Image (cartoon, rainbow, N blue to C red; front, side, top):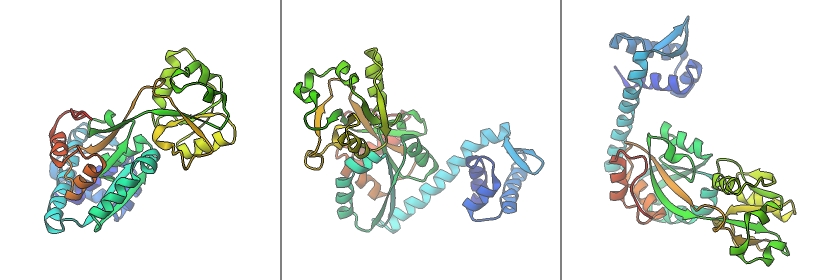
Length: 317
C-alpha cells in the first residue's frame, strides 16, 4: 500500500470517476491510475469501485466505508509534512486564504498588509469564490483558511470561528427622498416602493434581506443583483434604483457621489466566520494570520476549536 494508491482513490471520487481527469491531476497516465486502484483493491481483498466494462461508475459498499479512512490517512500525511516544515522552515512557506469578494475587498486588505510585515517570507495567495466554493476549497485542501458569512457552518468537516458582526446600509444618490427621513425611521415599506439593487442569493447577507421583506409580507422590486458592492453602487449612481450593501463596503470619501443610510434596524445582523478543515495541521504563520485578522483568536483558541467535535466553536466576539 502506498500514498499514490490512496490519492488515486480519493481523486477518482472527487473527479466524478473520470480517470482522464484523475490522471491529469496526479500527473500520470489513465492506465497508471487504473493500475494503482486495482493493486490497492487486490491488497485489501475488496473492490472499491463499481465497474461497467473498463469504466468506473460508482463506489461499492466497502468503498464507501474505506473512503473516509483513505481521506484521513492522506490528511495526516499532509499534517506530517506541515509539521516537519514548521520545524525545518519555520516562517517560510505558502498560505492560501479563500474569501468572498466582499471579504477580500473590504475586510482583509489591512490584515494582508499587516501580515506581510510580520511574515515577509510567506507567500500569501488570495482565492475568491462563493461561500460554497470556499467550503469546497477547504475540504479539498486547496485553501488553508476560509472567510465568508454564509455556508461555512453547514459543513460538519469544517470548524468555524466567529470573526466580526456587520450590518447593511441603504445607498442612494444625492437628493433622494429617503434622505429626508431619519435613518431609524425608514421602513421596509418605503424601501419596497423603489427599485432595489443588491447582492446575489447566497452572498453577503442576502438571506437576511429576503427574510426581512418576507416577514413584512412585501415583494420588493429587485431589478439587478451582483456579487460585488462596487457594481451595486455603480448602478445606483446611474439612477437604476437604491442599493442595499454591507456597511463596510461604503466609504464616504471614495463614494462621495452617494449617501449611505444605516439599515441595522431593518435587517438582521450578519456574522462573518473563519473556516478551517477539521483535523488539519496549521503552520505557525497561519495562526499569525488568523490572530492578525481577529486578535482574540489566539493560537490556543484556534487549536481548542480544531480539537472540538462542535461545528462552530463556543466563542463570543
